[in-house]
Amino acid sequence: MAGPTTDFWQERFEKKQTGWDRGAASPQLLAWLDSEALKPCRIAVPGCGSGWEVAELARQGFDVVGIDYTPAAVERTRALLSAQGLMAEVLRADVLAYQPDKPFDAIYEQTCLCALHPDHWVEYARQLQKWLPGQYLGTVHADDSTGSDRRGAHSGAALSLRHQRHAGALSCARLGVAQAAL
Image (cartoon, rainbow, N blue to C red; front, side):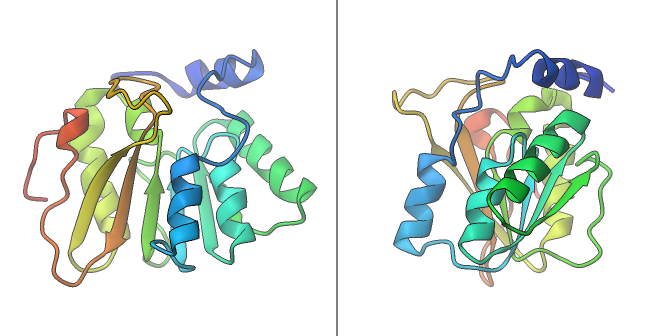
């Protein structure tokens, strides 16, 4: 598999080289929750890292499944949930192979796409589409306090996928994933 391995990410967590971890839920997620643009439902958080978004979604009544393939990330997320008295399912799994036991209503994608090698981006988009029923709308939002459109491992971009009865193909064009009919 091209790109960073589980060992690569495990080492980052063990050595506390997690500069992308802001120590709190994403300001964009908080804004969506405050505006009620995202309402409680069954939601996946792939590449959940330290679990800040998993915890916030659980706090707000979502049925959350956090997914990460790095043992240290899974441990951090579970510890955060425990410390805050929150409940969520946290799985150690490869997002390119994981199949949920039932579909999700939404996916909160903030950093997993950027952590994958670009060779896997279209495969990842197809995988996310399998997790959701029907047709989907994908949107990419800058979630960076500088407002810049940085690309790469720590871009701060967030991809929000939500079931839409009328939507078309998933598009991650802003991050360089070719628009493709999935």
